[in-house]
Structures are given as C-alpha cells and as structure tokens.
Image 1 (cartoon, rainbow, N blue to C red):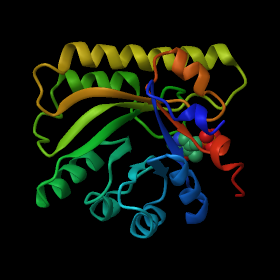
Image 2: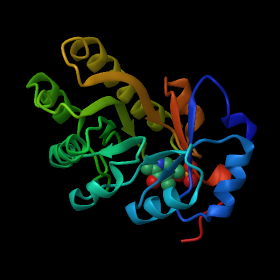
Image 3: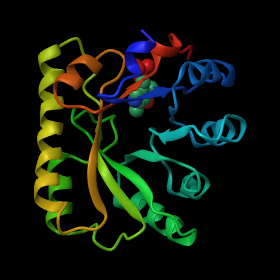
Length: 216
Ligand SMILES: *Cc1c(COP(=O)(O)O)cnc(C)c1O
C-alpha cells in the first residue's frame, strides 16, 4: 500500500494531521516528501521539528490572520477559498520577496458545509481578471473534495466537473496571466482516489490509508 503512492504518475500528499512526528518520520524514511496539514499551529511545529526537505502542504481552511505564519515555508496552499485570503497571501509573500504557490479550492459537492468557490464564481473571477494584480502568488491549479458518499457515479461526475473547469481555465486564461501556471489538479482522498485518478487528478491527498484511522 505504501509503495503504491510513490510513483511518477502523480504526487501523493501524505495527510499527517493529528499524527505524531514519529509516524511522519517513518513515511519520510520510506521516501515520502510531501505532507499535508489542516491546522496552522500543527503545521508550524512539525515544520520546525522535521527534516527540512519536506514539502509542506496546507490543505485546511486558512484564516487571514494566520497566513503570515506559514507563507515563509509552505510549499503549496490547497485551500484558497476567498479573494480575501488570496490577497493576504499575496501581501505577506510580497513582504518577504516570495511567490507562494496556491490552488483554488472549488466546492464541487455543493455541500453548504464545505469551503470553496462555486464553479460559476470562479469562472467570473477569471473572466473579470480579478487575480491580475496579485503578483506574489502563482495559481498552480485547483483543489476539490467530492461528496462524502458511496455513490461512485456522483463522485465521478463531481471530479469530472472539476477536471473540465481546470482545462477551461488552463486553455483560456493561462496564456495572458503571469500568475497563472496550471499544472496541479488536487483531487482524491483515501476513499475516492482511484476515481479521481481516472478522472485526471495528478495530486491525491491520502491520510488514513497511509497512517491508519484518525482518532478524533
Ligand atoms: C483529512 C483530509 C484528507 C485525507 O483524508 P483521508 O480520508 O484520511 O485520506 C484529504 N484532504 C483534506 C482536505 C483533508 O482535510
């Protein structure tokens, strides 16, 4: 199981939220270099304690007042879910002369409880060029979470919609925007990564299959 997620066809972000540094180190020794966390505090501590060549991914909802703390070291922020937080990431990145890699989170399941832009909102944002002035971020692609459901066809159609949106943005808006450089489609978790990969994902976020069930 562990080996299967280390290959050249896609990137696996090992989702280590709530897991000990010892268990992260084990996967690290196995060859994993991409780890994902959903809480800023935990991300900061683990970044400090663990090997420096780890690529840290922020995958959880990010509050603007915490952006400053992760911008200096974060590898990719998957969870950009408002222009406000994007603007803050841009400002904090500019201050330290960095360009921060971001994914736009899309609410593909249309569940009220999930964060992210709707497909129509994000189309408008690109059409209106709202991201044009953000010179210290690079939009690398999109992230989405499918419905929490056993309905494989539903999950498949949600991932398909996200992939179509990804292609639409890449084909229509990348060329004229210096801060759009699409190469990452982050979709798929432990229970739906196979469907996601079939639908064109190139980055999966795997927690429980690698670390065992979380106890919370
Ligand atoms: C927890 C989490 C995951 C991993 O979930 P598993 O089902 O344990 O693989 C992936 N993405 C996000 C955004 C998460 O919060």
